[in-house]
Image (cartoon, rainbow, N blue to C red):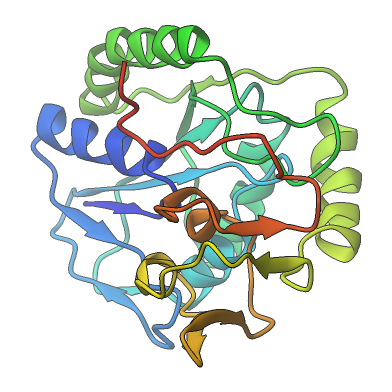
Length: 252
């Protein structure tokens, strides 16, 4: 079974492709579930597919795994994570969560996908050429990763980046403490009250109030509301102005 979380579509694409290539079933993570469970058969693998937020799996994914129950212990657990460039020590941090359940993370794979996080000065989307190049490389990598999963390979095959331990175990905490917030979201007069932002929010944190979106403090900064807005009427302070939008699949 493959459990996945995706804000802007990159991880959904990887999860769907791996499910097709491995023959595994697919289930979307619902962060609102208080007692999630999976029905695993003897010998079945459990895959986690999600983006990397500040060099670790999103906290909502970690918390979901902590709450997750399974009648049978997974025979093989793996992580397939998407990132804009690198993942630091994401597998090692997730392994600590797995160990708390008596499970073990046997393998981890990373997929470098188009950027979606543009909430800070200096952060920007990839060019269309770079987007297409990243997606093409992922399409080529997927069959190899699927084969390794079917072989139950025990391997950490990820792009670490510079200072991986510092980024995962120090910068991640700083990001969540100082940067991950919904207080800076605002909406312009271009809003057409379509409600798409409310629909795509994985945490149900966005609600239309008097025809305009309002955020209620439970945000993971996945940026689904921003990137899906058909009028680009949602912004994160001034940091996202003029930076464009991205949702997979991109249009060449």
